[in-house]
Picture (cartoon, one colour):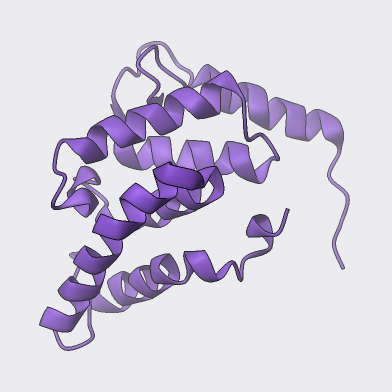
Length: 157
């Protein structure tokens, strides 16, 4: 089951995402040159989107992953804190990016981030908390935890 997407649309999506990347490897919200801010969260979602388009080894993906790893390394014992504004959104996509990247990149992040995420839920009695609602936070935490189970079709390449 599925549907066809025109190759020109996929190429346009790729060009758009690549146009949002900054020199440091991060991604901003839009191509508009007046928009200069970028975040861990936007970069995670952008790299995950490139990977979902089937782009795994490009320079843009590599630089995006490098940026994410640099941000995570700033708080090695609390890697989830790299997503400062939108914790669950950013880490859900970071988990996808690091899992698809694989190897030591995945092992390093997973070994530190998953225990932190599990402990946060355990501390609250099986609920994760967020200003956007506990239901949202718990759902996103559970989705993040299931990434290595590879249930999502994007992991079955």
